[in-house]
Image 1 (cartoon, rainbow, N blue to C red):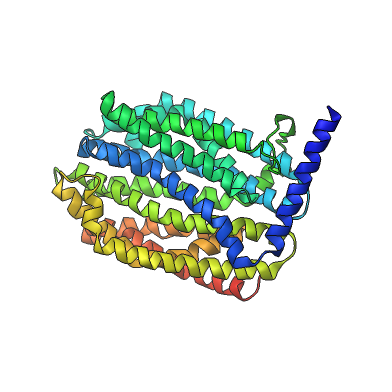
Image 2 (image 1 turned 45 degrees about the vertical axis):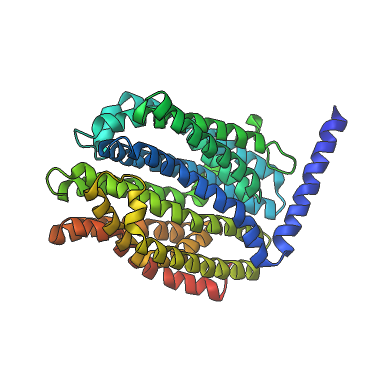
Length: 463
């Protein structure tokens, strides 16, 4: 028995040593691309969960599409805590591995995973007890409420698995094992497509079928990710390593707070967007407006997932090399990440602007008002979308090197500091068009906030 465990420990140490050499000595640009490839797939597949549900539900009714869109606010809440524990523990794991502190990495992995699972259980219980009030709080109108409740039901049941799945995904990715993260997420998404079609059409379950399909597929993805942590060379999850003390949670907060702040503001801004869209829409078109904004948010999130994937490919490179004291490698990888992200976003924005009506029509072709509003919203957002690459990469840099205050400030910009005041002011003067313009204005202002920090770190990564 000792020989078995001894051999396994030696193999883990050997593979971790190989990974250390890879992360700290390989040419930076190919390394970022190597880390980014699986994470781009993972992030795009994650975005596909919402895209798939919106696509299938869009052929039921406009109200059903709006109901799924309203529920997106709760999905961002799940993301908030999942990424908080995932980035908080994962960034620590990354720098700990860079410093060759393997025992500390294992304690943090177990604590982050168990914490996210626990918070997910609490959220599930509270949400199930307050289902209709929760839907109304997120912006449901009376005709949309039944559909929002139907979709939320199984999403709530699956919350512990969804939340901790995000934590596992980020832990694997930030230790340089994006491949396992990609496999887990992709498995769930493929299953989601199959189950959506079966539950919605074959069993005629409607919106509730989409919810059940997402719940089951996320649980399967969670299991695959958990198995992935047992692969040789990975940081293993062991309950005996759970260490819920003040210092551990302080480290999780330092690494995860920017993600928490960002996703909390996404949740708040989504709720405000739902409410303002319904309020400023022409009478009788409230559901069309809600559905239009929901569809565009999914289209843009799919495109944004590419940039998130690139940024998350940069993070383990940044974390390992920052932990190893190789700051010039951090600087080079940061500049490359900004350049690549901006180029991709420019191409995507042009394409989306040209084909805006066609993209919206894919989800719901039976509602002309929905298509008209959706195309306008999409084109507005594409105006400043290329600027998001700089602000996203800068935020991820500061988060990974654990400069918490600046990272949190930048996280608040896009959906908080600028989005919330803009959506409260613009519609007062120009109605629904002001709601349509809000994200574009917020993205431009966030870029201006991030630019000085980006320039500073591009010149020299400080200690």
